[in-house]
Length: 433
Ligand code: PMP
Image (tube, rainbow, N blue to C red):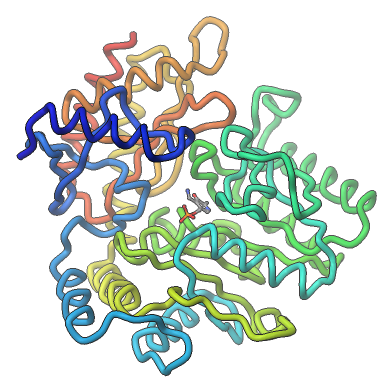
């Protein structure tokens, strides 16, 4: 266990050597030293129930023996790059991901992050369509590289306004507080589809529309079911590709569906699907799935030195096997459903809660001023701190205002842990009443 002084010193050293914009949660940031199941411990010995899973990277459970063993065994054999030699774990994981993706004639390319996965998807889409005009959703987050920042509509995370792509932002993912606020789902969908048609009419050739089925960083907001199916018809008519960014919504987290795009099933599978975060259960696995015709359109060799490295692939294989065999998607649906119910009941007693939303184990609690309806980022920051003091880690997100609490625990969450976390969150919410 660390001396408190050593912990404070580490924060000072962090500030001195890392970028100012590498923002940390909490006034006194947590130094996580180990984890088990749905819990993590900090350097001072405090235990936390983890309702954010390291930004959804710990998909299954902390220190899952099956993953640890697979990683240790592979690391004991060899740790190296993957791409110039045959790599059995990479081929095996690619086969399984291709079969699960729903994309016909699927090819898979592995990367080390969600950013790199989306970067590759944009590279493919622009090369295939021979235009760098992209459509993205308002309030979106797709990563932090030059190309992905330029399709990130959430201004809090769009770190530069300079862009290698021409991007136009489309309505549909967030209802917002503007002219769409009071429309029914059907009217909102119709308005957004008409707007999309109009936009494409003005724009000419477009490579792709990139969209998160449920916006993650944007505050766990979903479009009405079927909106992307309606969009897809328009896109198909114009030959525009659909990139579904499943970095947060993939692998069963949304409970009802294995992929987020399946909530809009009439849309059919996307042309390109990107994934990352939880599939490695904390190891750096990301990737793109695309129809062979799209995947193979690049005009020269392309590799990723570390993407698909055997150790990360071993983690992905063990984790995927575990989550399918233990039906963690079903668990996300059942336990997530109970948790959502509990959070809604708690929200009824806290007038600063504007909405509880989300699917499965991807739940958002939006806070707003009860009198004016204005977003309340101060309240969200205060609840985050109060929850931490009580032993609960959660996330936050939202548009410019960061007023949404994000709940995304490992998918193996038990009913008792869901109850415990809800009770801690209730206490934290009551501190801002
Ligand atoms: N897409 C989405 C939907 C994300 O939430 C994120 C990460 N928050 C990314 C892409 C980027 O992933 P990474 O941080 O692994 O680069």
